Amino acid sequence: MRLLLDTHLLLWAAGLPERLTTEARALLDAPEHALYFSAASLWEIVIKQGLGRDDFQVDARLLRRGLLDNGYQDLPITSVHTLMVETLPAIHKDPFDRILIAQAMADGMTLLTTDALVSRYPGPIRKV
Image (cartoon, rainbow, N blue to C red; front, side, top):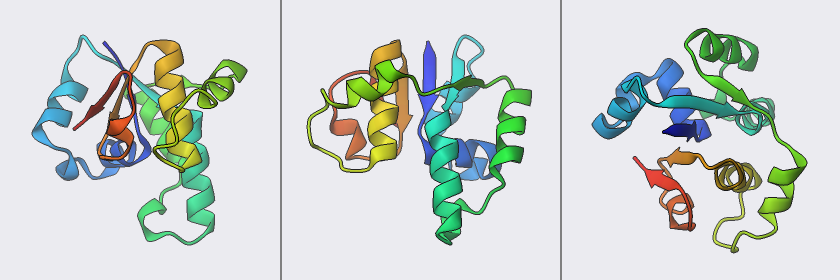
């Protein structure tokens, strides 16, 4: 299975693994799963870090390098992804979460999230 991690799960997997649920840890550790991170997550981290958010105080360049070194695959944002956002119901207003949902839907991935609101979207989304 191809798994796309939402931004909080990504941050926890990289730097705060104790925050991961047992289910999330098992999914991430399973060798048959391919793990992905989105350019949208790095963009979100850079923007929210610039706004002074305490929960986003990480060097996005080092995070990216560490993810790649640990076998994660980089998922760029394409025009197909951006157009898919238009088809999403108006459940959640966060543009970063909406592009992650669109990417998962367009690319046939399962989006792993901790956000109950995100998990209400139809499609390949799993709350862990």
